[in-house]
Image (cartoon, rainbow, N blue to C red):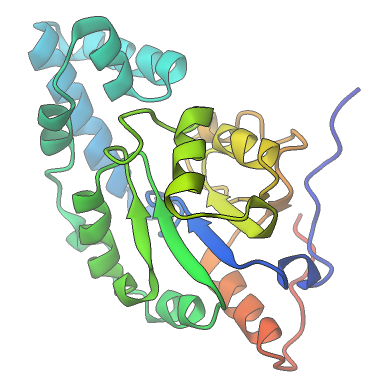
Length: 244
């Protein structure tokens, strides 16, 4: 029997008890339409081709295969080929983040949310900081849990989530995770977190989005967070309309 569709939002009540807000970075905190991650993807392909001495076409196949099998291309390269993760990350995150516009609306919305806010990313903290600075949201976050902190174990590995929870002493029953890759929400739901899928990334990111590990769907994160912050502050603005 097919899983029920993700719950829409008749009001903001389910978020009134949240005390820890967790956000994925790339294609979540900013829209995938800016194609920033395309730069990263291209750099990954370059690294794989150079490291393995193969063609760009073959590197693309390896890149996709490792991502699916190991959670990230880097983890696959480490496991199968003994790649130095520091060299990998330094190369793939050497990109131009200036394509992202500042987002004062997002900054204001984040500033209006009660509780702690963290970035949880399979990228490096250096990359996250550059993106956050470009968006203008850095002051509103309490920390970053990156791939280094996770011992190079990427989402959706449960061990990575457990390290995150331990590092920041998170009460999972009062935490929410926002993610563009639906399968990365599986461990969060298993740990008792509220989960929000932010669609818009390439088709593979939506695989599994019809599962019951996706509790809510938010199409426009900045707009929705602004409305949520207002509602939690007791402002009279209306609740969001059902999606779809």
